[in-house]
Image 1 (tube, one colour):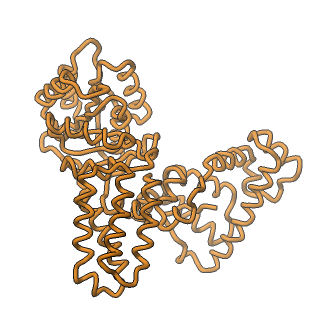
Image 2 (cartoon, rainbow, N blue to C red):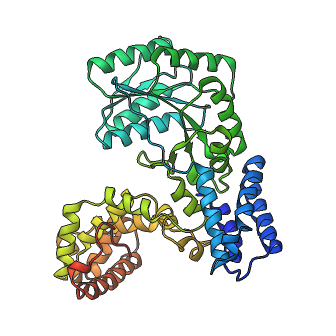
Amino acid sequence: MFDDLVEKLDITVRKIRGMGKLTDKNIAESMREIRRVLLEADVNYRVVKDFIARVQTKAIGEEVHKSVTPGQQVVKIVHDELVELLGHANVPLKSSDALPSVIMIVGLQGSGKTTFVGKLGAYLHKRGRSPVLVAADVYRPAAVEQLVTLGESVGLPVFSQDGETPVKIVRDALTSARKQVHDTLILDTAGRLHVDEAMMSELEDIKKAVEPTEILFVADGMTGQDAVRSAEAFLDRLDFDGIVLTKLDGDARGGAALSIRAVTGKPIKFISVGEKLDAIEPFHPDRMASRILGKGDVVTLVEKAQEAVDKKKAEKLAQRIKKQSFTLEDFYEQLQQIKKMGSLDQIASMIPGVDRKMAGLHIDEDALIMTEAIISSMTVEEKVKPTIINGSRRKRIARGSGTSVQDVNRLLKQFQMMQKMVKQMSRFGSKRMPRGIPLTY
């Protein structure tokens, strides 16, 4: 996420942080460099101009010149202004006194609306809500079928009607949801390749028909300023309540994320960071600012770990580590929990300093898949007592997992190293064992 922006800003920020003495000249030079980086990231030029002006005004203030570490103080100003630019604080979804709450999803075709409807439904269901997904896109081929498939994959009902208008579909869906006591209705509306009158009129009719509690505009994070321009057009006609940024896992620049809130004045409420249906995060400006400045996002990492980790299994594992009986079965369970937290690249991006140390390197997700396959090809006895795995067993495991004997040997060697590490950790006592974040190797 924002790889190019993070890398270039990091170089500039490190220069600023190392300044022992600030002058008008080196502040101006630093601001020019930040301006260049932001413009290259496709941030709206008006947004960049205002941002630089605010940072520069504060950076030449008396409080910075009198600071013990003036360079670090300027970095803090940049961070604080990024937070303000991105929206200051997290803005949750609105709730309605009269159930169900209706969340209307709008945006251009191809921005990821339908997938986000499924993600949002799964997100709310996981938090105790009872959502219904509504297929109101009757134009795009297979749009209804796609939403039905998404609904089935997350265990949520999908309301659809053949041969009806979108307005009638959403009205009937609202009536049905009230009868079946569902508390949330998520409308998947139609999009177009560009903003047009017919689409906007239909969306206005839907808005009048069901009076949504919340209208969310979905913007493709990879389209840069095009996303900002379409957001302005939708805002003018619908006055939406919040923004969703999708495909941020594939966006190396990040201009849309840094521009869209400032231009529209509407908060970013969610970001989509992957293809899986759990790859959705509430948007926190302070956390995003930390990521952009290469400082990681430990809070989100811990939250993901808490969601992924089974507390009973964690307690069981802590006891096994205390008794120095860590097995390949335990290792396999740890891999499953790591996978629930997201891709390794995403996890690494949340750890402060990791991005800089691993610049240019790619974390091989296939290695985890191979490890799972090898362990899955073992018998229960082999997982508990890997020392019994002789030459013939290694050949069988390699054949069963579609790997080589060398791959099996490499895993067993890595596991032996991990067992030694676990034994060393257990000497400090279980009370000092970190809980909540899975072990890695």
